[in-house]
Length: 579
Image 1: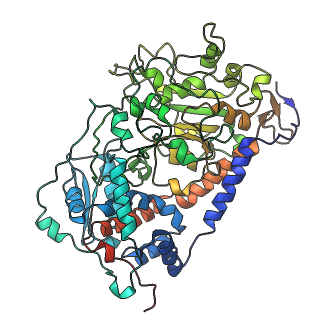
Image 2: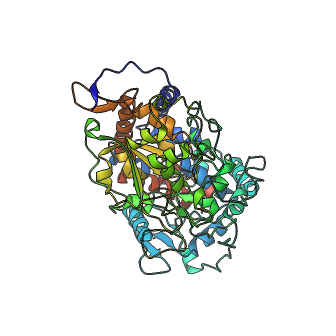
Image 3: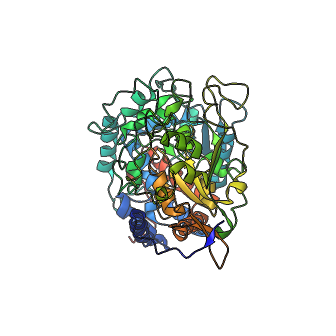
């Protein structure tokens, strides 16, 4: 039984430093907020080096009318995504976009859609988003990616050349020389020309080989060959992950980047054997919900974030923090690609579930042949992260006190009739699914990539629980979320998960808080966990609303229309400037 106990004041910890640093950086970013059209346009010119796009005043009016927060930095992803297209002839861009299989189009303020079959849920959701904005949008074609996996990886050298062209074209023109209206696409509709042939790389090729051409020439991954042997555990850091601060993620961009983390080629399903592959090395405009850092797809809010699908959305955000269970909860399928008998030990979801399973960890701790080695992970020395919990019990027993992570389907390849899988059944017990609202009764919500990004992440952020996030994928909202302020970042090796949980949850020795009766553990930083969880929820309710998705989409499509226009270098909004 837990005793009544007043824990000593915790000592300084690396996470304390990372939280403090992140909060200070985020505060500086928020100080850049603009609330007047002239100030927003000025901030745009300063950051982008050119005039805002035509219609910027309409965008500003829509944003302020929707109570959106305008910080120019929050839209950086748009300019990262579109920059290379300034190095492509606009006529070619228009033709590529127009002839794609799945396209949402706006003409004279009316939205239409073209697809290869009658109903595609993602296309319907994205079409709905655009149609809400149609009266303010110029003529535009938006080609859509309907696959989980991202589609475009242009060689780094070509991207570098294209981005240089964008930089060389950016200038603040005199007001009298600026074209303030977008062109009609009626001419393209009347004479679309022949479709441009694009070469696609498919499943017979290594995804790692397809992807690494997008890495810089001297990056750690550019010349790394795909792994030949995918048996046993993947390579895992014996010490702190590279680029970390005393073992914890300090630069989220670097931690997510496969070009800087070559071990991902043999520890993430995306590069081992994705579920489907159709990737081009050509500069093809495709809009989608997520992408790898080396991808050149154009990000938009994911279709599942816009939908009300209960798989990705919950009206119940969870009880107050103090009324939650002191648990880590995870449910999901064993997705991530084609996990097979000969490669499943390298898949990220399998590895994470094994690493937070008390029985699996205890078996590794007691492995007589190789101490700390499991079928798909290798434990570090307890001394690496100075785990306080291991002063009182082994790691497996500690995890058993609070960890509840399980697969609802083992997703064999080739698939079986049911949720089981002959080669992973000995290691995983199928668990019943839990609705998101049920999961939010627990304090800690790890979020791990599946076939691409995790569609539950937005709902996790909106909950009163604490998301612990590991990913190699980028999303539209990344520029407006701060790690250690709104969520807890985790390395893709997951070796830091024990240090993270040791910090937030504590030693495993329970005590009862006298005033509230809440059960906590000695050495916990429960207040710090609560602070991040609620800060993430409050921030998501301010900048990740459906209204914010529309604000982002409207800004993006106005910029996209300019990039596709023959007069793009002269186009802009100058209504705020004096003659």
